[in-house]
Length: 309
Ligand SMILES: Cc1ncc(C[n+]2csc(CCOP(=O)(O)OP(=O)(O)O)c2C)c(N)n1
Ligand SMILES: [Mg+2]
Image (tube, rainbow, N blue to C red; front, side):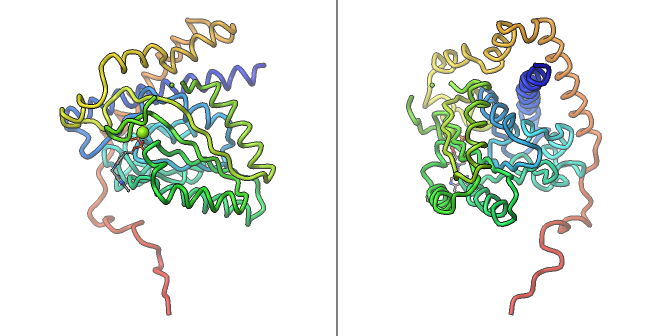
């Protein structure tokens, strides 16, 4: 029970970490301190946190353009993530990747990409690697409802099925691809944990891939700083408010209290601790140096470059 309690409290903590991290990101964009695009995951936290709770450290994940939450759910370091967003040399990709390129091979975070659906074939490749090496590592590929329309998505799923690869395709159906509605839902963290645990069991047992569709919702605009016409043209304030009523952090907190796993005070302690952790990460990122000009091309190409005849 202690182990289970630790896991459920860790899930709460990680959801809160993502929320606090991105509340800061929103402000950094507004102040012009964070340049470029930043796509927030606020409202969707249960999906990544619940799914990653079912994984081991040496299992893999891939993400997309909306992927601050995925590495945090896998146990990533919020300091290195924040530094990467601010373009600092202490960031996950030494400040050269930014918001859409967080990777940490040590804990199975294979990377993310702003090219919609492009990480699905990468996930299938990693799953093929697991199979060829004879280990039982599974891969979770996070992608959106919009990405499900891309050819690369279907090609990746087809190959994974034919080769019975240990990959879980996790579609985060947040109802919209930018402003295009999917129509018509809720992923709570425990439901995600349970369904992913079963998919992981199947994958490790050699039974092949699973497709999970998590119905979820993003509270924020497609990306920070989006022009007004794109903000207001496709959904109503009432729709957003209705989704906020079933907030994943509130749902999980309530469940913890109802099950007598944690008290309200303990939940508030986690919230307080998370706020301190993120504030400290931001300070770390701000105080970190930018990469040196001499390092511009370091890590960009294979070294040595392969020679093809
Ligand atoms: C191949 C490609 N086409 C179009 C885009 C522009 N684009 C960026 S995000 C996005 C919507 C993706 O929607 P979805 O997969 O549902 O993810 P969400 O943003 O909802 O999390 C589009 C069309 C892109 N980055 N890459
Ligand atoms: Mg979407």
